[in-house]
Length: 309
Ligand code: TXA
Ligand code: MG
Image 1 (cartoon, rainbow, N blue to C red):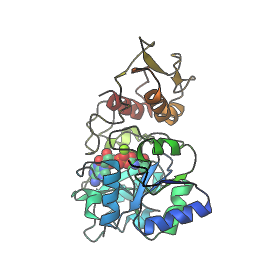
Image 2: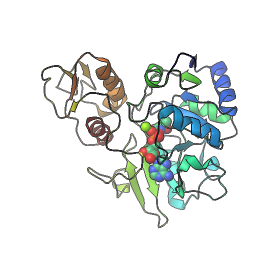
Image 3: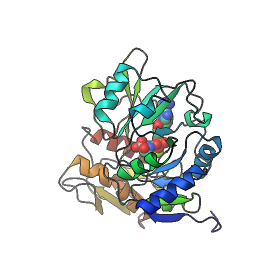
């Protein structure tokens, strides 16, 4: 992008959050920390504002956005919540759970948010900065991960600037995120059954019949090639080959290590920072140590397989 457009980076203090709220009110784009990754927020009730998200990210228009709300009461204005949906929200909101629900016909959301689907994806995030922002505005916030489409997701402000500098109005810097991988997405069907569409930090286990290794992912944005660091990625590596940047885990020590102690939560929090570092490194290739397919390890391996695709 040309240097004409300036992206302001502001500390996520009260003044920064107030300024971000004004930008959003006037239809602008602000990258905001959530507990999972930084989101690129715009008002979800404005077609113009939502169009700016797709343009800034270079996102295909068939890929719908997650709408962020304060709580269940606000969610009820945009979707039909069954008892099953209400129970999931009560148990896990605010938190890294996105519910795909039947959209209300009077929802008043920009059509592009849901990409023409009869459903809408809703999430009440747990991060205090995103929560403060949602308190200050009277509309919900559409927010995909704050990266160019197909690239590595951002877990700190500098990751956002790496792909969106000059393309968005502001980044609210709230430091590194904690969960590190995007929310678990669960569809709640009309018959009350639930299906996991994307593995994430929240592990529903036996509650999610669609879950488990190799489950079919049907969130339309889950394209095979995603989170791409721009070089070949080899998975299941026990050591680095020639010119490979090694991302380690447990006993496999790398140039960057997800978790030396083999802790999967720590590994999830480090995943995108290690991929960003590997992308920037002079090595022409990336190798990644095996990560167990259990707990949040399923989400880590899902993202790694897409980075390697
Ligand atoms: O943790 C997260 O979920 C982050 C933060 C910012 O909240 N957001 C995020 O957004 O990961 P994004 O756009 O990178 O991923 C959203 C996913 C896409 O795969 C999209 O296809 C899917 O959600 N999605 C959105 N609406 C949907 C719907 N109605 N039905 C099925 N999938 C949907
Ligand atoms: Mg994304």
